Length: 108
Image (cartoon, one colour):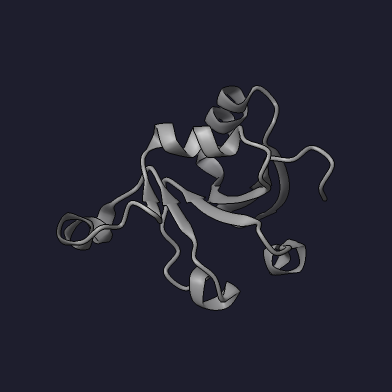
């Protein structure tokens, strides 16, 4: 997978409007889930998941910050993400219905 080869210490990985349950295991790190609850709704209702399940507003605050964030999402979200990020998010890989983006212009 492309993502693992790009990660550096301190980088955040975020999924947007989706949840990929195998991703944290594959990467060996916490993955932030933005703007999605689905099957995690029950757990989020009974325990504090605020560190890794975030709402849309919090996601955009983080994506606009200087920290490097890799974003995994469905390709159907790309137009909305490009528009809302005002060009700051760049697609670095696409496969099937999924896309990988980064919020830093100088990174591959």
